Length: 248
Image (cartoon, rainbow, N blue to C red; front, side):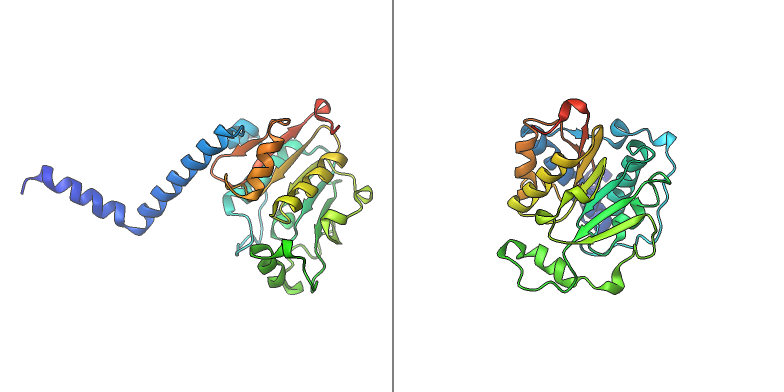
């Protein structure tokens, strides 16, 4: 058999190997999500279209991930955006603390005189509404006080509350990360509250945008009014807000 005939078989063996197969699937998924989002009005941006990586130094600590956390890439990008956009004296808000992994690292990258606020359902909450069924309920039930990585961080203030019922007059913030409920009504309420109370100029980030889920359906609607972008290689969407983007 000639070498020319062997090459396709070698290629097939290569493609069937674990790391290569995962890489191919990941690239195909990324291309699919980018195409679908673009069709619905949310373009995909590279991280260096949003920030200048060459001017940033980011601090990351204790960021071993588990189910429910952002990925390593997402965590890096979140901290880069915070580092680039948050100015001295401006504060940051997270909706959805989980184990404190994300807000703990973000707190290491905000200006020295800034405060990070994070909101989560009270630990041990019972009788969850049907809206928390599925993945959200599993994540809420899996939390434990011993997991909280942000304990002891002096620039973090924790609130335990249903974010959809939270009194946002308690906090002042110019940047926000929405990663609480993932059903349509919950994300909508969180988004409306953030856009209503965030200071301009400012920025908003959303997690768990998969192009076809309820988070995505909501953001497609908001993309008719706001210039929302999807960050390539992640499930994060980004919105930069200026004074012209005031909530009606």
